[in-house]
Image (cartoon, rainbow, N blue to C red; front, side):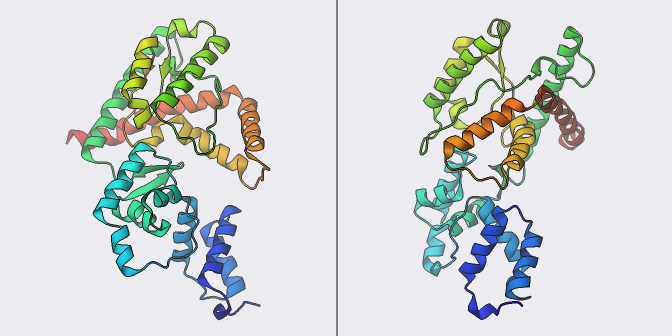
Length: 314
């Protein structure tokens, strides 16, 4: 029998949404579960979607009590600019971290990110909802250049059609985690590159001599002067990557989804147990998994050119 709504607080209903969302139930199923327990009019399906999005984005506060004056102050233009700067520095920044940095409620941080800045979450990374004309032109130019290079490499090395040419991948070279509270800056990123270079030397003999092509996005640690100096020192080439485009990075479109499904519903006693599980999962992946991720890049470059070519050239 459904419970009377009066006996339940909004916070308790939201806690139930958070629990069911953590069990990977869809918002529609969560809404039906709530109706079966609390009654038909307990909460709208739109609100269930809203809170599921909040929890997926890292929101943990179950309240929305915020004074009118504070709400206006919390979402001021100054705070909007500060949030925008924080996200540009770390595209995987969680809402609770954003809120604590600005000393505002998570609901205010959510409004700034989604409503004021118009961002959305893609594979745990904040990206703009709409690409500007300049972004589209950059995306088109870079994809054309990558396609040209891929085709040229296949002619030289005799790869079959649809192959990734000199972008061929064969598995995980380095697995590294951050300590609690540790963040990535340019110096820390260069330390990771040092470890990656050593891993290549040991696991891919001759590859350092043949040359290394690295793909990373345009995050501040990756484009910093000290990082650029490291890359120039060792002669590593950077694969061009348009800004705000996670769908062209194999880690985002090919790796994180299967990893999320692998971890869904599992519980770990501590971080080390989690890391060990992820490490073993990566080691057990067949080489074809990584090759497909690289091959998909070429198909996505071509799709980008086909879709944006006519639009940009008008």
